[in-house]
Length: 329
Ligand code: UT7
Image (cartoon, rainbow, N blue to C red; front, side, top):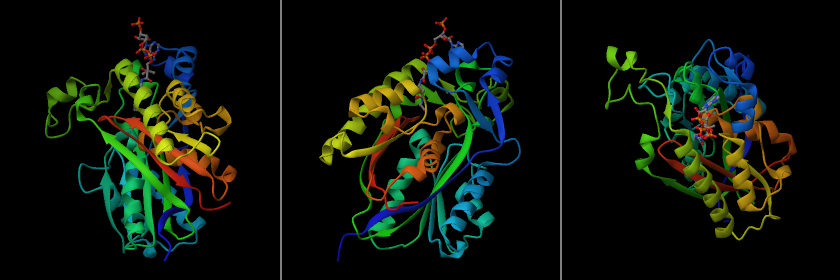
């Protein structure tokens, strides 16, 4: 029997309708459209005004199930990546399954910040490759607006809200996830962190007054690590799988900063036309960026395309996944 690979057989995104533009932000903090565009590539982002991460995930998954003619009861496992769960517990994956009627699935959340989707995809793919399951859903979702300080110009211009989901099914034609390289280094926690609300600093009047429930980032430090590690791991997965830049059809990079994306593409020797970019309209949606890119570019993808997904995020966490696209849409 041919080896079983975990293939993406459908992708769907969801972004809330409310737009927060650079011009809107310039009225809230001391910034400008020109600064944000030049330093990050972001023009606008979406904000979820009513509802939680599970609501965005539910919108994406419901549409995904419809599009792939899948009955919610057929789903066996849901792996959901997020740093903005509905609650500390129960998991957002549990809430999502209830909202969508995936009553036969077991489900859990996974936290790897901006690398959440590649961690979740790699984890979920194991359950398909072993032959254990036939239908698994992977979700990347974040409602970053719930943990962003809209008085802090160094973070509020970067992040946005959104969700994306993929269906994974077995493939025995050699298509699907081929390989992954994942890393983490917890010594990076001081540079990108939500300081309070966990067991380290439980919520108190002082933590609220000190604005410690919001994301804190030392942008320059994170940039240095991100630009090096995302480029290195993307080149490493190509080398490990004997892929030249001609062999790679698409790079799907985490959308944190256009300059980090450019450095990664350069290191891989890829021209701009092979790089998925939607940062200008959604900003950094953390675990949502990669499935939102696949969703935006789905119509351009062809069966057999070699695709490298790569990300870097809080933790630090980083890595790359190499897959062969499994369908023409
Ligand atoms: O997705 C998870 C991983 N995160 C990342 O990958 C993010 C990595 N970091 C970055 O993308 C960049 O570091 C930022 C976009 C966050 C910042 O860009 P930068 O080019 O590194 O700027 P900087 O932090 O060095 O700040 C340059 C200047 C500073 O002013 P001074 O000290 O030179 O006077 C900042 O105070 O820009 C100032 N500044 C701003 N000015 C206008 C910082 N934020 C803003 C702002 N508008 N929003």
